[in-house]
Length: 167
Image 1 (spheres, helix red, strand yellow):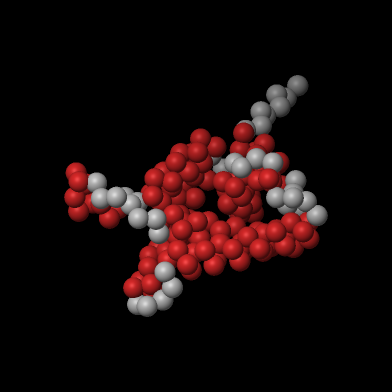
Image 2 (cartoon, rainbow, N blue to C red):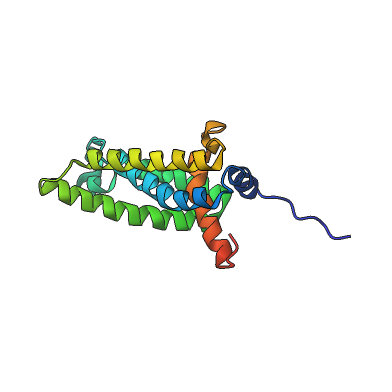
């Protein structure tokens, strides 16, 4: 008799998350809106002034509120799946690159970083709620806030499954 493989916590979370993400239209909306929400949150957190820490000297520019939130998020993801955590770290890096571009636009007279990030955040959440209205099910995070962290990871897991890469 073959021993049944024990379900990992990450797979249990993905199964629960997937329950309210079956409709193809809702899934498509999530592929657009979840990355935009992550990006906008990175922008919003990065816009919060961070105190200068004396002993860091010239390295103060590398520490901000986002770097602390990112470290905590990556630690959580690492406990769930090392491969997915590395991909999230890479995605965070891409997002942060574009956040810096928004900062350059701000310095050139454009919207403040927090303003452009807030606009993206609100529009992306409107999209999410439209997707869940189409689905006919409430968002998973209304039952458990940790699903706010699981959404981006779930999308990455779908991508890896399509590529036949184990996570």
